[in-house]
Length: 208
Image (tube, rainbow, N blue to C red; front, side, top):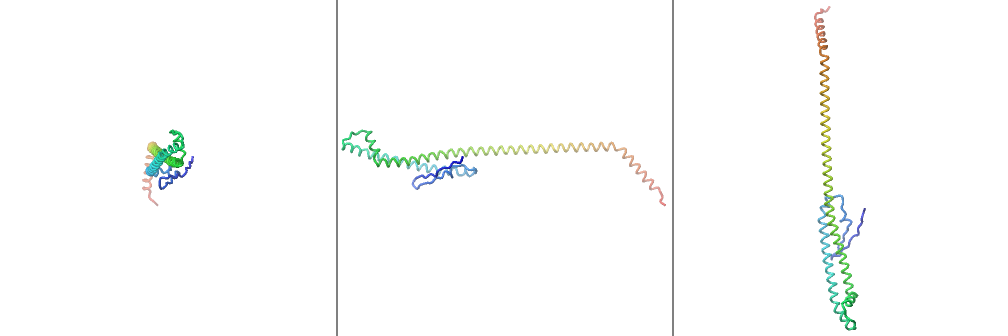
């Protein structure tokens, strides 16, 4: 399944654009992926750390505004004859514009922080996936090497059997030739004697 990601805009001071479609998927070039994984992980982790610092700062600012508004709200209640309770004071502070703006900023910063934390976890899982894929590729290569070795052994056995069969056939042919010569031996000797006698007679004949 082809998953397409949005390009993340992370505000960590200068602003960072993270294209997950380029850095998150694992390509077929595992050597390159292993080489780039550490630097990509470090880059994402640094951005996540900055996002966390910005979120914590926004959270402190929200708490500071709350603390500043608390006495103002209590004073306003007293001037207007409103009964002061912790619940009523908190409800009033939450409705003040200054606190609402600070709360919205804290929510934006927390969202960026959570996104970066999720991205760090994703790259952690990516590292484990690369390790598993690397082990799988090595196992496949080992199996392929074993298959090639087995093929070579089979080929050597086949050649050895063929040589043995050829030697056996040659020995059988040699024995057959010897047997054939043994059968034809006496007749061949008599024929040679007759040939020699004819040559002698030819030598004795005086030409006209």
